[in-house]
Image 1 (tube, one colour):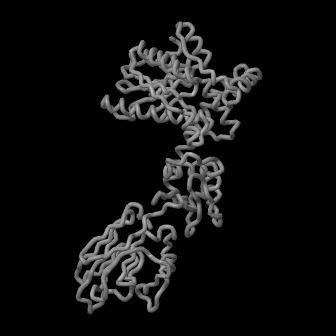
Image 2 (spheres, rainbow, N blue to C red; image 1 turned 45 degrees about the horizontal axis):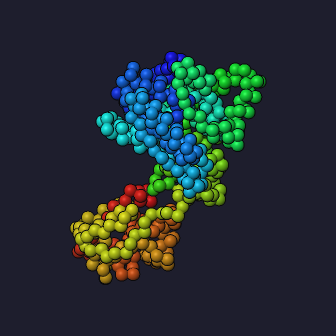
Length: 470
């Protein structure tokens, strides 16, 4: 195993994979690659002083063979002195329930369980969770296969280089070793492993690439593995640079507010199209980290929407891109902010209304008429009935300060460029049926403080976090 240990040691040094005094969790299926990984990690753990444990996930897909894999891994970990956690998950049922293929469902389950187990081990050891590592047994062959699969599917640089030495807490110490080198090392060491017959299912894209495409490429160029590996190194570096530039441009060109992204059209239009794509992807990933199905077509839709006049377009998982008063916005549809519930407002007093924040009424000296966008001072003696706070209603009108006639509240909103989808979160203070103050926008002429005013009340809207920027 010396050759594999050298490859893993070199990778660990180059990418800070396995720092001393950390904890590593090896994901071991029982296959040859994972068996080799566990032996190599054991040697490195002794050298470097990090803790090592094992996770095996039984997918319950192959009956007795799956159970035999589980028992094999338990015995292997025990013989090497490592703690082993085994989880049994019906991946077939999960895939059917969530509309996933078996490979994707299994991968999601494994990494979810690995994150949970690693968090627990870091907590128990008293170290930061970020210092933990999830070690997986991907080899150079896996990386080349993934590259060719993604190439056939039309992926960009990020997708082509998705199998990286380090991604977050996931590390791949054997990514520089070929599958043949792993098998040779196992044979020389006299080690056994389990074979998964489903790996030879010729209907799967990966197996087709493994047994048909790669052999053909090796006939054309016997050194194609090394050539593709070099290409991946170049792509990975350029992808990282573009990703960094996209993150920076997203900070400068996008505003993240109220669960939405608002793009500065002028800044976006000045970016080269490739960087514009990166900026859009970075911004959407930052604002909607739970959305996993944004593909090239969705990104292109947002990129095209930089030009004014584009029709609103649905993206994925409830997101929509649309124009709003000359600003390009991506937001989740169908949720919106909580509406302001109707309630009485005492003076002095405070009312709370969820995501919209709170509204406070306090007595002030009539000479203190200084107002801000979120506060207004009214002549309380002009109020004829009890004050109440609620949301705007269809057909509402008010007499804005400085006007002789009334105006539709919807027109006041339009003048203030308040989006229709958030108007229900703007508090409306009423004197019976008469609007006193449209919070944060306009107060009414009939309630202004005059030289004859003897009692005044300040109304203040303390916006909730979701209402900042409305």
